[in-house]
Image (tube, rainbow, N blue to C red; front, side, top):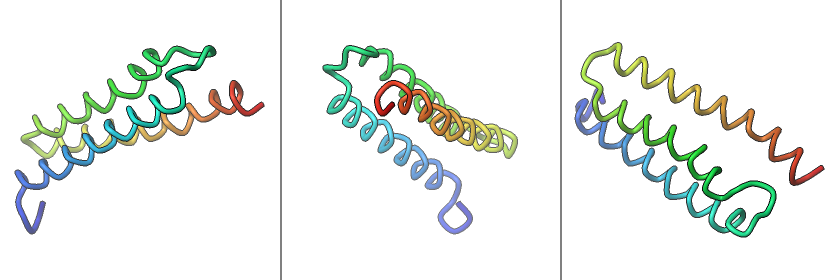
Length: 94
């Protein structure tokens, strides 16, 4: 954002959020669509809705505090993803 501007930085961040959504949908479809332990649609909602919210936060951010909130939300998504690995380990690898 410093070199190319805030508008282009927001576009790049939105692109990466969209890329994560597409990759998550592909992975969940390939490995969990036919799963009987946990619903594919539940997993899709559980992982995609936070990324959609992050995309909205990034694209609607105007002030520094908005970007700070989006950054903290992104870190929360990362912690959520790390903690979700325990559930996947318990159900699928144990």
